Amino acid sequence: MDTFDTVTECTLVPESGNMRITLKTDSGSQTIELTQAAVAELMPGLLSEPQVAGKATTTANAISPVGCMPFESLQGLCGLAFNLGGRSLHIAVPPNGIETIRQALDIIELAYRNQRMPRM
Image 1: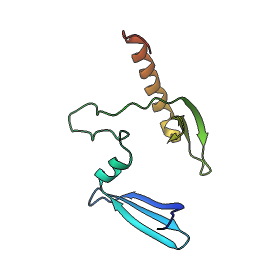
Image 2: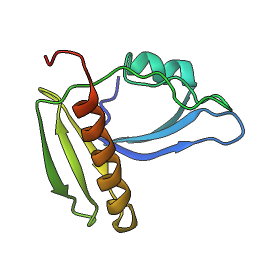
Image 3: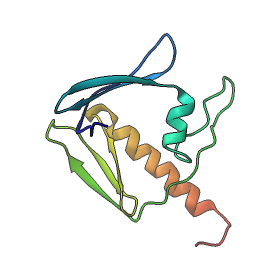
């Protein structure tokens, strides 16, 4: 059994909806395709339900981070890094998306202020 040390491709296959992943080892590379069900099994509880036309929201499990910091990658991508307690979730924010993120955070802050539920 090979140990894979690099992911060189991770793309959606439009025809099937599968996820194509190419993994590299010292002895070469191998490409596999994962169905959506297989991806969901690899990351249980992290994937939201698919959007339904005419429905305003989808259901997703909440991930409560223990911290959040800005990051800049070696490729120059900037965004938010959420510390999930042992793992991190990085979300890149393009320059034209900064205002959208600010607006979304303002709406979230307002929603929390208007909640009548007790705080945890």
